[in-house]
Image 1 (spheres, rainbow, N blue to C red):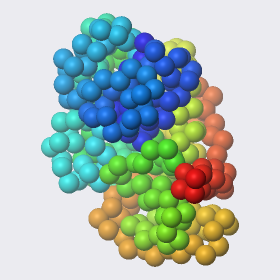
Image 2 (spheres, rainbow, N blue to C red):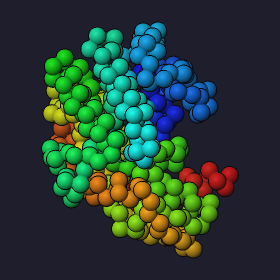
Image 3 (cartoon, rainbow, N blue to C red):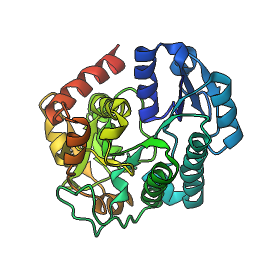
Length: 314
Ligand code: VAH
């Protein structure tokens, strides 16, 4: 059985739907701090679990005989700056709980998401290497950097099969992101359809690594299905797909909505975006587990506009 912790989040929602499609809904237990996504609650086993609560996670794993855990609960970069200690508490203790359950052989395999947020202002910004300087300037980035060290430690010293990806910003249409800096790249599509104007909280030239959700989910499942002996990285894999600026995605949307307008009013999230790379070298993921992205910016825009028109105009 599979347990997703944080199933109602941006990634968790689509991961749960995909895993239920692949493994049968009875074999995929969704959990979150509340029942905010009724579609997940009503389409298979659902448990209210606070990811900070070890006993709740342990009891769920034992009751359902869970062998694989996807730990998708976290406070993201913008929220983490507002609530540093809460971000440290949730992001770190939830990871220790699942790592220790694997150490004690209660579960067998873990997926834990890292992020390009592990990189900082001193990291090479173009084609950021797999192994490089990581001096993150956000609380969220610190939790992901330290989390990567703990994942590698539990694998190398205690034989835990934990796997991780440094996700770029993720663009999706099913569930909204919450509290991230790359969220502008989701908001802009919604506003193009519903409002015709977008007030962007990053400057027009802020180039960031991004990926369409369909590619991000496939990467996650391909990594989890890869033979253990092929994996040379047990901190977290660099993963790349597309890099674009707010102006790039605005231009891409204008191909569909010519009257769409944008204004740029950078806020505190500009400093976070400025500390992250513009592009990522993911050659190790391509070598170790044959990763390759499929959606470029225009293919993503085509899909986002199509799906959001169905959602808002139905
Ligand atoms: C954030 N979407 O903006 C997340 C992600 C790479 C960015 O970690 O915080």
